[in-house]
Length: 131
Image 1 (cartoon, rainbow, N blue to C red):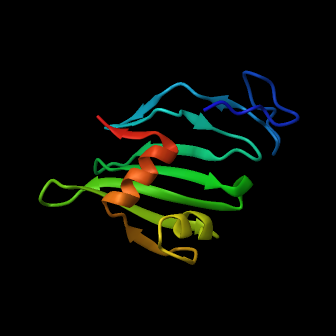
Image 2: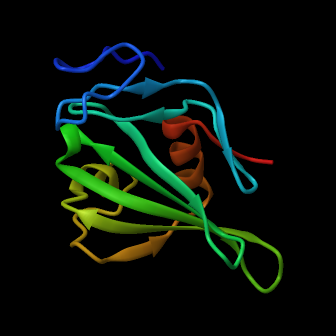
């Protein structure tokens, strides 16, 4: 994914302001998850804005859509049977993503577990793969 830097940002850095425009398209690995589209930061960017490995082994990925008006986080973990579970939690106005996945409107703080079709959508949209 190639994203042009927003006004005020340099090609290789963030201006420190709200319109930074820094983009890292190289794959990034966090825990057992690889983000092939890299990290995208800045105004008007659609994509992953953060990723961290939690102390209990799961990985949480934050993402934004619609110029940052919609945001949420995906937590990728394993259940007691060893199955991988993707849980999405709405951070702000996530009607766009929820609607795309057939979930309809979700309020801030709502969460739902993704099925196989939704996981495929997530992986294709954000370039998420498990190692």
